[in-house]
Image (tube, rainbow, N blue to C red; front, side, top):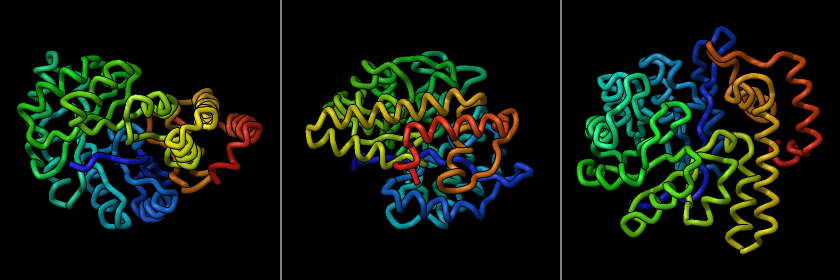
Length: 303
């Protein structure tokens, strides 16, 4: 299996003012990502408000991405849900439309019983699209499932033939490094914490999935290029710029997904509002953010 090299955006789901899904906006979105050198799109995940969408909406979104994605832009379909039958249905659908890969987070209402329970779950989801690479989506901040992923990969590799790796969205750098080095680097580890990407590069990560790659890919590409050239000062400068940008947006006054989605509309593609229970920024909050972001000179990089 060819490992991922580069940035994969986790797209927002474009919505109309009435919060219905805006499928027509996806073509321009896909072209924008492609033009910015992003290598893939991880759709209907956390950033895409996947758990706030119906199963039918998620299928239509996946179909649209596959219809309009430029050649070379990889589409990974997140199929996670709290109901196994829905996960299987989404995975089968992803295979039927020719998606590049599937991914699934751990069930987060009734949780799996340890590593073996998670493998049981993922085995059934992955087998529903057995011709596609499968990634376990590790995001304890949303699922509450905090097991060691390197242990999951050891066990799952014996039972899931199409297991490609993991989308690792957590702060346990030691566990993530073990995943990268496991079985002589067999697994494709997609790092999911934008603000810690430089640390992950240092132990061998080459692919990443993130929300801020939607609008700020040039900052991270500059960081990766500097890292590859051995210019640690420039790489650190770019990582710190990304951290300041993320901190500013996170402190915007509403859920970060809503703030990031607003910012995407300011610099690139208008993705509309978030779906309840997430709420949008007030005009006063928008103005305060504009002032702070301009002071950071973020617009020099993202427009």
